[in-house]
Amino acid sequence: MKQYIDLRSDTVTRPTPGMREAMARAEVGDDVFGDDPSVNRLQERLAQQLGFEAGLLFPSGTQCNLAALMAHCGRGDEFLVGQDAHTYVHEGGGAAVLGSIQPQPLEHEPDGTLSLARIEAAIKPREDYYARTRLLALENTIGGKVLPRGYAKEATALAHRHGLATHLDGARLFNAAVKQQLDARELVTGFDSVSVCLSKGLGAPIGSVLVGPAELVREAKRWRKVLGGGMRQAGIVAAAGLYALEHHVARLADDHRNALALAEGLRGLPGLTVELPETNIVWVDAAPPLASRLVPALAEQGVLATGTGKIRFVTHLDVSAADVTATIAAVRAIVESS
Ligand SMILES: *Cc1c(COP(=O)(O)O)cnc(C)c1O
Image (cartoon, rainbow, N blue to C red; front, top):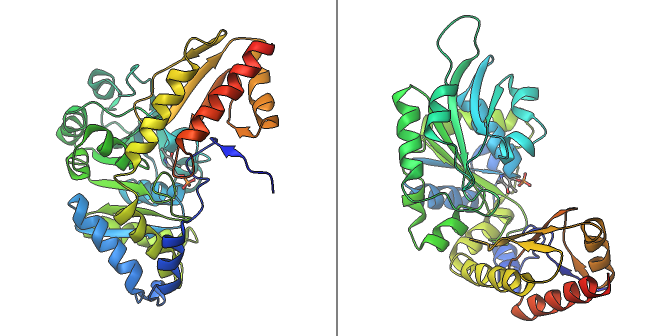
């Protein structure tokens, strides 16, 4: 098989030999009965690490967020969410389709936050003709940007003052924590629930974990079953997650360094506007005619990225510094020949 440098997403990582070994050795049981010791260990570990009562493993981040939204909100309720947030844009409208929950999307500020004024203005008065605003959902990192220090505390405090619950889509929470050199626990203070992906930069093949108060997690567990997400000997998956939390968190700094090196290498090439990344996602604006040509031309050279016009390169566990150098050379060759 042709060897690609795959920068489409940090989901493309393959389990390392150490992770496969941990999966092979995993103690398992039937998790629908609550019998799987590895699943229980993972759930407890992450809940404890992030300062919550309980945790719950899901097959995907999409299902994890949806069950959380359904645990927080009922039929006819509404959640406030960023216009570009994964829970609004990239989850098939699940909250509305399956949860009867109306999203109220809000414009982002350039740093990825939702302004407090905008949040406050969007909270609907309690009148029969409005949906009931129930929840504020934020995301960190968002598009690779880290929410500024202190922002989450202010936004969640505002939400709580108005009687709203708060959920954090922390698919890449550990990227944010490593970037800010803070304990992940500090980044989630003020949130009633948090979802974390094990299958992104952490390099596990499958899995997301929801953490929150025991009662909310119990409710989410019921919705997980309804959504078809009750798994049996899921300890094989949980073992990979535990391994990832043990071995793949600190090294996220390598991905951030590689992303920065990539951005710096692409800066100054004609026709490209490159944002310096905060974490592991590099956004490159390509002017026409390069806009539609760059991604397919790169694929011919064995480098995979996504997007037209606004192109996304994501670094991860399976991308080395040498891969970054090769990618810069491939882009340069395409730019110079067009
Ligand atoms: C990847 C991701 C998810 C969950 O995605 P799944 O592919 O369903 O695991 C949720 N939120 C964000 C921000 C993500 O990047």
